[in-house]
Image (cartoon, rainbow, N blue to C red; front, side, top):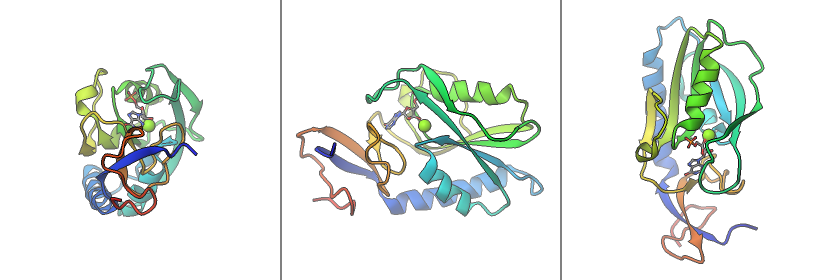
Length: 192
Ligand code: IMP
Ligand code: MG
């Protein structure tokens, strides 16, 4: 169901794993040794990145989840952000690290950072796996970026289109229905 579209691999599972290890080292270096970052993952897209990043960090951490959505199931976010799940614990005085799958216009992240900052964390940083730099409209600072990417609609490694493709271990550009360009086997990630 919903799998009539082609996928062209943009980032392989190996490329992602290498970069996640690099990001983890960057993040470990950004905090004094005594600090225990509190990772705030943005559902649902951030779940796979969080799982890999948290295991690559070489220090104690804690984890919480936040759900934010923009209305609609299309390939463009509407910019209207709503909170679908709040954090379970207070973040006042804590070193919060927001773990995002992708920053597009930046409107979701800008809203999220404003919301979190109002709760007075000791520090607030952001890591995103993917950054569509050219699409940015909101003024937002992202300290750690996995991969800057061009303006394609991508799926996999947590990212969805209408709730499909989140489980793919790689990131792929979603083709138009009926197009055969760059088709891959959606399970193995190999070009067909
Ligand atoms: P922003 O508010 O425009 O930065 O949009 C951020 C949200 O839009 C992300 O957290 C994703 O949920 C979604 N999004 C933006 N671009 C993509 C994409 O290429 N694939 C899948 N979801 C995307
Ligand atoms: Mg997201």
